[in-house]
Length: 146
Image 1 (tube, rainbow, N blue to C red):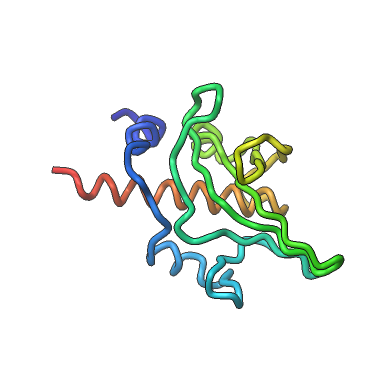
Image 2: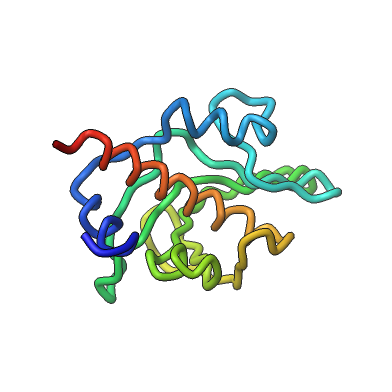
């Protein structure tokens, strides 16, 4: 396949889970709660966390290949937990900038935020994590080929 975009599309047929290697990459972000991976936090205690094993390749309604992750936003005041899905298109991962799309857990569009790798905002942290997991998943899948 030509380039990462082709490999991203090719890997859609694999059911990919977040594996031990990814945990090592993000161990410095690990949440105190073992069932969630910390992605970002604010000074007020608000945390964005990913559900291990929820990563998958898919396509959006426009037919674009996307990398999807299920997560939650934990807000200590007023003590709420919002469940969400986030996705980044293959093209935006390749460009290392674009839009992080936020969906309800049933897949309904909620909103979008700009991101750029190492951008310093929450959307950038989540999008970069998703793209890194996608790249590792593709690399691992390619290593199993003949």
